[in-house]
Length: 335
Image (cartoon, rainbow, N blue to C red; front, side, top):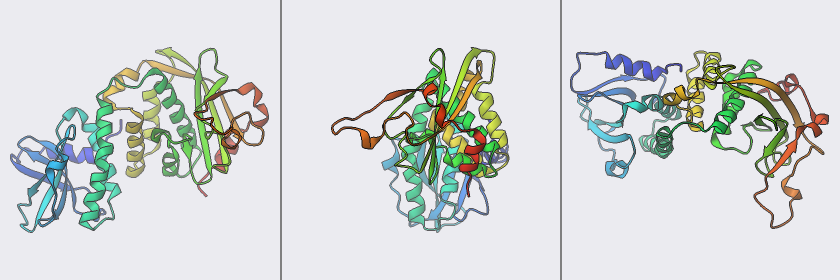
């Protein structure tokens, strides 16, 4: 995985052998308006994010003392008696990759905020989300089906990035990790990605009556990826993710957004060895524009009292709606 800017700053602070106690800190960026610092609290050498606020700012620490692997506290600013630091400390070093990504997400989320109350409010809003990610990291990795689904979504994302001049637009449109109705969405279009393997590779399953309903969004596309799975052969999930990271180049905001979405998907650095041997080879790719009489169930056609609709589609009956990827990527460009 590509090292984040904030990770590099922490490593530099950890290499400073002259500091033995208190807070060693460095400003994240001069372009960030609030006083936010990447810091190391000694003698424990705990990684933390430090936000400088007024000494009069009221913060009730004990309300946040049940967080797993994170601690929040305030300490005096030794250089200025009129201010103090609000610290977000990482207690468990095994989660430092997650902490790096989440802290960068926080920094960019409040980059233009100068009001202390709003700044800290936004910070605390994110803590519940952080907590759920730390809990996921303690599990045993993604299930086989979850790996397949994630591979398909990122495979499509790679194609999208390679056919777009706006990489951030591509990554922002990937909403599968957020359990959105379709896996990729923007203002007037959506793409649902379905990945299949095994004998029934031409049958796909639709999760709800809204997933292919073009009365909700102007244009809906269905992307189907049929794969074979073998141990030690093909492209691994890790290799695919590493290539996307490389394609995103040095754009800190886009890289961090992608890594945050990986965390939301349940993909963690600590689990990478679990995904290294399983390889995927592409058997077939199909792409359809969902419209008109495309075989589907939509919300307005469901009788009153019927809910939780799930159904399957046999793609051999959908040839009339097939389009090529070049057409798709022209139609969903950020214009």
